[in-house]
Image (cartoon, rainbow, N blue to C red; front, side, top):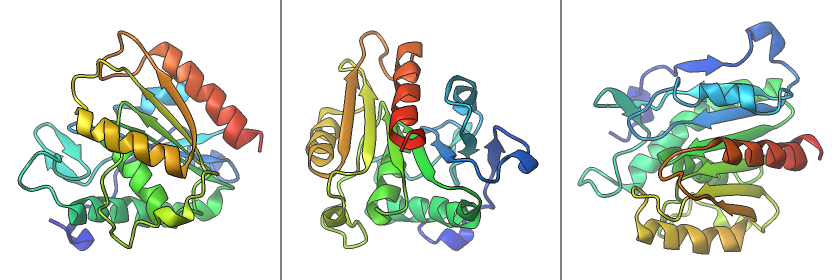
Length: 216
């Protein structure tokens, strides 16, 4: 499924009621494989209150939850599927971004792949990216990924546990090479977190967002 027109209407949970959103920096949360829009919304209470937070549901159903694109190890995986998922998110962001001075992306696991894809396709659109226990997809020279325009100035936070049992070594190797060449990287390793998020990491993310987005 690569045609964005057959995707369902976006399902979004917000941290604030509609009359309290305009004029505030927007932080978009992108959940991991098999989760939903409720999965990350609890983070909003632990992040800087200056942001209005929106948690978006991925468009493809999988098991009890949802996914942005098929798992990279599956036969259904294609780069076109990644691009379709990113287009779905981008269309939604385009509909709301006029109300906000900046847009920042936070993705967990597959959500980090989605967040970095959005950045690579629209390098000038995003104030910063937060990637938690995730990876960057191999775009294999696809011209819609404008990596050449990413000159190391967009801040990116990448937090992970070296013992993460889910993200495979080839994905980590590719991501490591990509982040070093294209973004202003803040990379932090955590112990005992596995494929998850812990309180210490969210503290670091809050500091990153304050320093790199709110104080700019």
